[in-house]
Amino acid sequence: MAILPILRYPHEILLTESNEVRAITPDIERLVKDMIETMHAAPGVGLAANQIGVNLRVAVVDLTAGEKPGEILVLVNPRVLENIGVYVEDEGCLSLPGFTESVKRPERCVIEAMDLDGRVRTLEGNGLMARAFNHEIDHLNGRLFIEHLTPLKRRLIKKKVQKRIRAGDWDLVPA
Image (cartoon, rainbow, N blue to C red; front, side, top):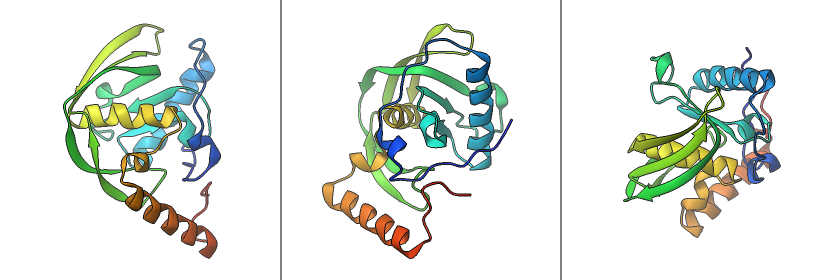
């Protein structure tokens, strides 16, 4: 297993829709292990494959941040079936470190995803889990949480990132 660099906005792969996984292979299993280790090291509660430079529809979610290994969810080719309600909470992203904003997300979310055994499962999340599902699926669709902000807030964050890029303290692929 390996801890991999997490790409930063505006790296182009973060803004590109990810490709479907055709089959669970040893390479996919290895990718998932690396993603879990990278997510826990960050630390974070979710990670999409494109955040580590792999353009595949794979995400991992662990609301316990590594405290309960049995609660890690592996989502292969996930898709939202239903979003219900609204809840506003501060949200951040491993690909936009240092930035958080209040984001409106569904209170409840039902998704469908394949697991590492190749079984398609229906999963339901409430609160933070619903937020994590939507956040990671957004990543796989080439969207970051800033797309849910007002145009003004989004513009301000983009401007701050560009300023940091020009100053040399924001690498798109950190070491």
